[in-house]
Image (cartoon, rainbow, N blue to C red; front, side, top):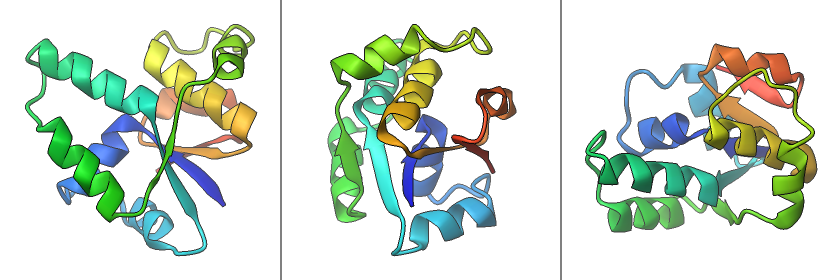
Length: 126
């Protein structure tokens, strides 16, 4: 199964945060699943870091992504076009891009954000 992990899920995984549910841990640890980190998440983290909202070493995060053998996903033109097709269930542009990428890439979005379930079966709220 192809799974794009939401930004907070990525951060929780990397720091082994207790907020990461057991279900999410099992999905990420399952070798049958292809775990994907979108460039959208790194962009979001970089912006929040610049604004002083989070403190993280992006080089270390990049190393952790590589060490966990997570696949990286760039933002492509057709992802951006898909955003325009989404209903306005959610205003966060990063989350909307992640949902669009899931739809285009036939993947699931692993998130803790219950508001995203409105986008349907492509979203797994854990």
